[in-house]
Length: 490
Image (tube, rainbow, N blue to C red; front, side):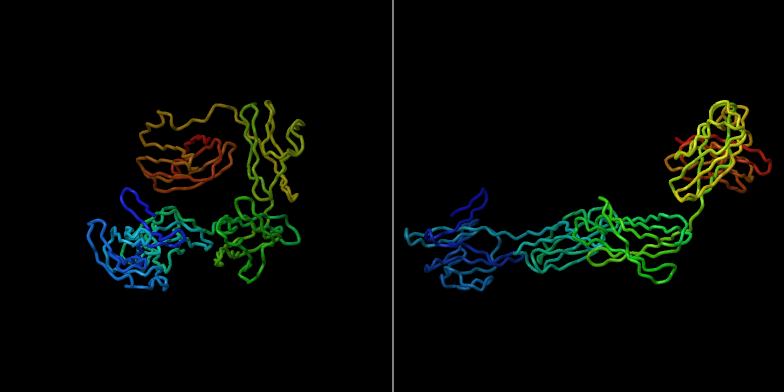
C-alpha cells in the first residue's frame, strides 16, 4: 500500500490478504534534532535502511536485531532492526516478498512533531478563566504552557503531563486577547491569542420600601439582588446557581436565607422580603469553588411624600402647564387639584396618574391647592401661589453682542447636554465674589453656590437635568448686580 503526495511517500507491505498491520518503517522516539526508527524484518535475513533524499545506504542489520517495541513493551510482529539518532527526513527499506521471491520497497518520512496549540475553555470558577492545551503525543517532555495578559505580563506557568490538559489562570479584569504560549522540551513554541470567558461576580442591588406598619418605619422593605448569568445562574459553564444569605444586620451576626430566586432570561434575581429598617450585609456564594462576595445594603425608614415646588408662574393670561414633583413616598403616585382661588370647577376633575396639569387661558388664578398621594395612602396637601408675569417676552440672554463687549469683562454660560452639566466662564478684570443660583422654568431652585475672589475662572454645575428651560442667576455680591442666563436642554 503506497500513499504519496507531491513531496513525500509512505508505504507498507502486507504479505497476504489476511495479515494485520503489515511491514513498515515505525519511528518510535522523537528528539530535538534526531529520531529513532524500527524497520520490520518480515522474518527475513537482513534489513537495510536507505536515506531517500540522498539515496544512500544508512546501514544493514540482522532481522533479529531487536524484538521488543520500546513504546509498548510488546514484541514487534515481524522482528526487524532499529536505528538511533537519525536526522529527520525520508527513508526507505526493502522487505522480502516470499510469493514473488523479490524485495518490496517500504517508505516513510519523519518530521519533528511541531504539534501543540491552545484554545479557550469554559470555567466555573469565579475570577478564574481557563485554557485547553494540546500537545502531540510525540512532543518531547517537559511540556510547558505560559499565559500572558493583554498587557504582556506573565500571569501563569504550567507543566503539562499529558497531551490534553486544562489550566486555570487569574481572569484579566478588562477586555482583551489572552496570549497562550505552548513549548515542548526542545523549545519549539506555538502562540495562540484567545478571548477569555470570564466569570465575573457582576450584580446590582435594588431596595423596594414598603408602607409603615408592624415591621417598623421601613415598611417591610424588600432587597433584590440581580446577578449576572455566568456567575450567579451558571449559564454556559456548568457552575451551580449561586446562593445568597444575610449574615449581618446592624453589625450583629444573623443568618437569613434568600426567600426565593428566579431567572428572568438575562439575570438571576434573588429576593429578601419583609425586612425592617437597618443595614444588612449580603454574602453571595457563587461558582463551583464557592467564591464569596459581599454587599452592604441599608433599608432606610419610610419618608412621607412632600411636594417640592414653591409656586406656579403664569405669563399674562396665556394657558400654562403646571408640573408637580414629589420627594419621598412610595410610587405610584396620584395627583389631584382640590381647590382654586377663585374657584374654577373645570380643574376639579379628581385624581390622575400624571403630574402635569394644563391651566386654560384667561384663568386668573391666585392659588391652586394640590394633593399628592402615594401607594401607601399617605398624602401631602399644599397651596401653590400663582405668580403673574405682565410680559410674555423672553428673558434677555447674555449672548447679546452688546453685553459681551463690556469694559469690565464678561460672564458666559454654555451647557454640555451629553454630560448633564453647565459651564460658567468668568472673564473679569477685577476679582470679586459671586453667588450662583440655578432654577427651573417654574422658579424651583435646583442649585446654589458662592465663589470668592474670581476674575478668570470656569465654574461647572453638574446635576441630573431633565429636558427643559433653566435660568442661571449670577450675582456680584459687592454691587448686588445680577445677570440672568436662559438655557435650554433638549
